[in-house]
Amino acid sequence: MKTITVPFGERAYRVTIGCGALESGDWAHFVDRRERCAVIVSQRVLELHGAYIERVLAGLESADLLPMPDGEERKSYAHAERYFNELLSRGYGRGATVIAIGGGVVGDFAGFVAAAYMRGVRFIQVPTTLLAMVDASIGGKVAVNISAGKNIVGAFHQPAAVVADIAFIETLPDEELKNGIAESLKHALIGEPSLCTMLRENDLASIRRPDTLEELVFRSAGFKAGVVSQDEREGGLRAILNFGHTAGHAIESCLEYRGIMHGAAVAAGMQIAIDLSRARGLLDERVAREYRELAARYDLIPRGLALNAAQVVAHMRYDKKNAGGEIRFVLLAGVGEPRINQPVPEGELRAAVDDFLAG
Ligand SMILES: NC(=O)c1ccc[n+]([C@@H]2O[C@H](COP(=O)([O-])OP(=O)(O)OC[C@H]3O[C@@H](n4cnc5c(N)ncnc54)[C@H](O)[C@@H]3O)[C@@H](O)[C@H]2O)c1
Image 1 (cartoon, rainbow, N blue to C red):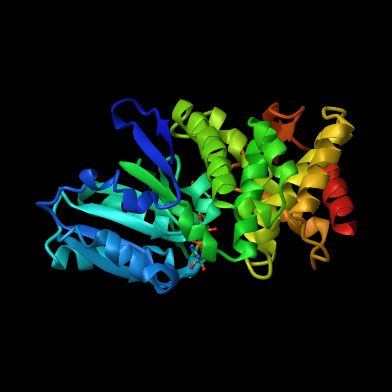
Image 2: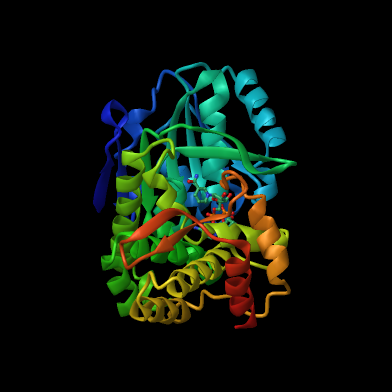
């Protein structure tokens, strides 16, 4: 078992990582047993791991198991309102706790419910996908979608604890595992080079070994914890985490989030950012080659996307992170050397996206 402390002063919290971390119970003391506790759990995870979850929760008499159907469309404001009413009707007060057990969808959703209900109740994250373990559960960003866009309504609400129980990953399909690998590869490139070595020494099969996964989550979540604790509200440094996401989001959004996994879109976005960095003479070919090799090793790059560069660039223009009408990128000057807020003229961008789409 490994632990990371996310140093948010008096709101500091611990991330416990390992096989059986949920059962080890190092989080249960955060639940006020005189008050109610809502366990919002992914329906799929409950189907796969119900016996384990029920055994662990057996000691929490005040817990209500509230299964949540899977799918990004459930991470909605309308759905959250139903949960607010449900908690109120069950007599939940300010001392209540919300526990999220599931991937990033459940974590973001339950975190939003916890942040808004009674102006904020205690929250515990139990991520069950690799992406949620290395990324979504760390840093306190919680949100729901509205009809106008994804993650538009949200809050910063730090959990009291994060429990990354590696045992859950056993049932995670490879396509979902790759979403987490893509984020770990991003962490490797922007500041945790030891992850490059780990990814180089493994493949999609060997990375699933519990001890290897434990180490991967430890390094990757540890890196993210270091970044977010220096910039809780995304005023500066945290922007490095958008590496690969400007073009990645545009690709997902052009495809209306269908037929492409998030990790594949981010991998495409990282490739485009690396090509832009190379074209400006900012980045060495060696790093670009290392990226291509690692992305190929984990089969991350999507091919044959039915898109054209003009469409992708048009979507980037509307990205909420773009200031003053300029499209800005996180570029790379080397491993561990991200450059945030780099304006990229549309012509330069169209050429890089064209090259990528042409394969
Ligand atoms: N808050 C943040 O900082 C942050 C960061 C990145 C992503 N996100 C959000 O995270 C979400 C994506 O998260 P995700 O990739 O975990 O997707 P997800 O929550 O949709 O989970 C992916 C799929 O895996 C299934 N699943 C979960 N755990 C499983 C397990 N152990 N075994 C088998 N199946 C399992 C789920 O039922 C689902 O079908 C998006 O909504 C995104 O906006 C948030």
